[in-house]
Length: 386
Ligand SMILES: [Zn+2]
View 1: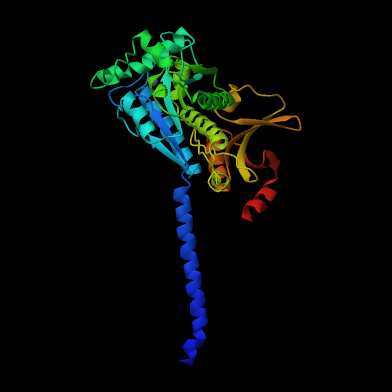
View 2: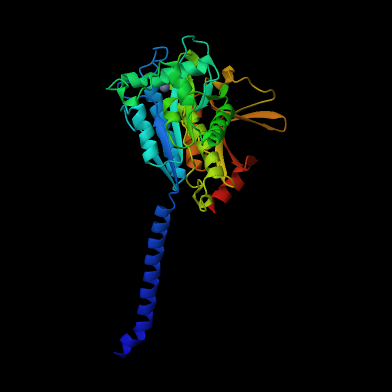
């Protein structure tokens, strides 16, 4: 009796603590759910029986496959880094939603943003570069031609466009009527489109600019909407890039970064800062040649591999790079140094080093950086072990 009486306050304390933990858990779970304050619809162009452009015909994958791959990885990046954002896909596999269904998915979801992803083609094999469209009257024949081509997907649908109340993708009057639709969201659409083009430019893509054209899918959505033409599959060099893993990953990352910029400006989220990419899970693992490339988190040590150094800057196509497509250059005491890969994990840098040595960079060694500044390995290891 006496003993149990003495234990009582402890038991009470435990019960109190347990209740506290339960409350906290419920509270956090509730907060997570309630915090989904932004919906983005990602629309991979074409699909199923509509392959989109076939490009030069040298590859098995057509526009629908590239659009889907890029769309899914943009979505994955957003989902991983923005728990507040709900990502809705118009298709996640090789299916063919009609243009009307795509806009309905976005409108029914009450989405905040609509991003449609496509690849371009031209009868001429010369044109190259990326462009992003917002709704409106086409300012050039070329923009109108591309919009008409994309809208023609309607004819591949089961009921050959009879669903569209007189919307005829081949009739120029249709486009005049379309462009007269009120566009409450034009400003925001242009903002996002500009961010996309800025990011593309930053990775060295040819910038064809932000353009207007009466694409069906960005005209009938009731939210800021853009349509991205990643590049020309009719241009051999560009098609090679669009078909490459590296190309698709870089383009996805650019679109993600543009979204991130737009989101930080337009979402009224209180808790987005806590949900920013955490250093522990770096945003992107780009791996060309099996090499690990991750984003460089602020105030965190990252490991890279130095492959070459030179008193004079080396040309990108220099034989010394042994066909390596991706590397960074930095200048230190007048010496140009070339580095590859990026990770907060020393082990991953070691993997990169191994791959690079096998490629013939026998002297490849690991270097460490923090906020873009080179630090000694000793310092880096001390910091990462904390
Ligand atoms: Zn397309």
